[in-house]
Image 1: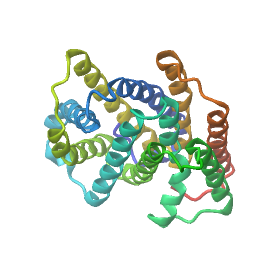
Image 2: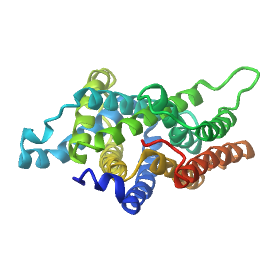
Image 3: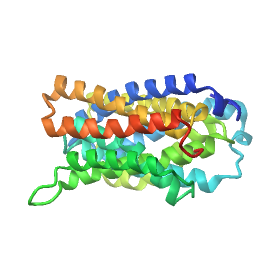
Image 4: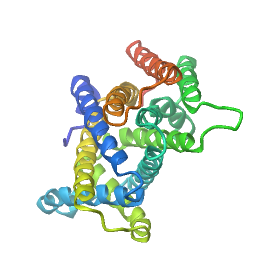
Length: 295
């Protein structure tokens, strides 16, 4: 995981492999969180996953000492952590109130937000074709949001916020991976986001049952593995290549939703999925043609 800077630019195959595994593991964690919805506070779920991540990383920190955390980019670590925290909080809140496939799709729609964040926040210039890919994906999000006479479902809007938070995390992770070790990136993320969550977790704490405690543990370990794979993916390849592969989460989540909750997607959901995925595939094609800016 401690890739060199040159490795971060040249090992596309390894980056794609890590991204595929990220989607597979992440979808199982989402399903476990949905099982907990309504019984365990989302703040407790988020805090538990960050605490488990820090504990898992302690042996690495003890071996390497605090020098391994030395960085000149703490501000970027901080904002990356807050963005990821907001994304996870919004995701778990939405999971309890909308179908699994909808929540996962809105989070997986992050690639359509990544270019906009790169442009407005990090100042990366983008060609017009990239904005076309964003527009296609946005059309899919609008379909998923299902705007009706009474307005858009607020819980779907929360799910969309999860995607925006993830997109900000994606963009900043790529920047950090050019100079920071994967372990350090993950440790800062878990520690900063965990501290941010602690007051809310304490305020909403209820002792979970043994079954729920086991699910919390599973989510924590799964999220650590997901973050490790996700960070490694961005260490070896650009965000414009890796981020669209998060759409595989939608396929896995759709299958789990049907099996465990009987949530068979309707034609609008399939249309939205098709549009969002098409936008992601278009972004990949643009990258293969060399028409996007360096990210």
